Figure 1 (cartoon, helix red, strand yellow):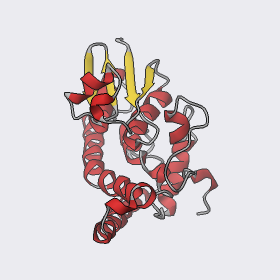
Figure 2: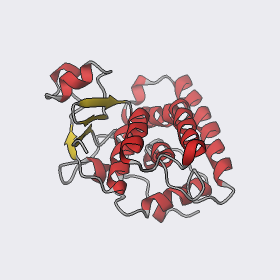
Figure 3: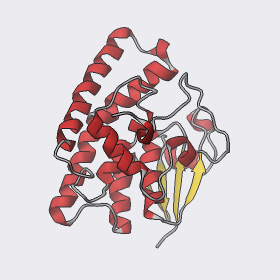
Length: 228
């Protein structure tokens, strides 16, 4: 298999989705941390040239000489390349893709922006915008709660998939967004956190010991310590 390189950053839940999948899959790959707090055209090569032609964001994954961007698209490609976590059969594959499309327009919209608004850049979001994001998140997490009430272990029943990695990407920072999670979601996150290879986002994504977020809330959400 061609060598895999992942470019990411400790504050990026989208990077976390991809790196967590690779770690749980026990894949050999190279991880390079990119400083996303500097201007896009000042970021180090080769990431700068590779990313500027493709939205200029992390994560970016190189598989040999082919480069992939946008976290959910990367998850789909990795599942296909590795033959892992892509769902069983045509139905499972379709279900994975449906969930990834849902995440991008639902939790992937509301939760990251609530985290930014409440923990990082409160002056950049007008009150009406934060209220709207909070209402969107409440509806989105309610839908996930409804799905998990049937007792399934993971999103595709007992089968771990890229749908789990995608949906969980920012939920381990739910405390930084100042939102509460239903018990079903907390239990599901706990099952993900018990997987071999799992690490919390900052531990997973930081190449430097002692990394500390510049946000107001420094801690991450640990579902194993939550009282349900």
